[in-house]
Length: 135
Image (cartoon, rainbow, N blue to C red; front, side):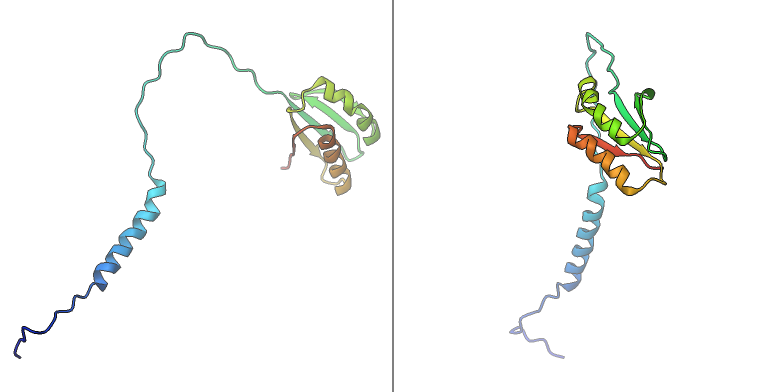
């Protein structure tokens, strides 16, 4: 076989591109999991203050539709039905700020409408942080 100096040599870069794509995929997968921690020393504070725990309201609706109101785990009020609770709801908003976290615990045997009515009543009065508690 005779070599011709006039022929242009062809470069096959396909294996190079394949290797680079694999390396790029590895880098893209591992980069988000890398964490960097800087070792810093924080200055000493001159005054320390105890942070108060945010108060929470828990509204418990039983199967017989009695509603109990708990503040930080201590029972405050008991209402016989939803109408009595709604009548006193404005008084509740005057006692507690509207940004207080409100949790609703309801018996699973209650109708869906009863629980959503309770949720809607709390939202309509102005409580913004209302959540349902499940097990």
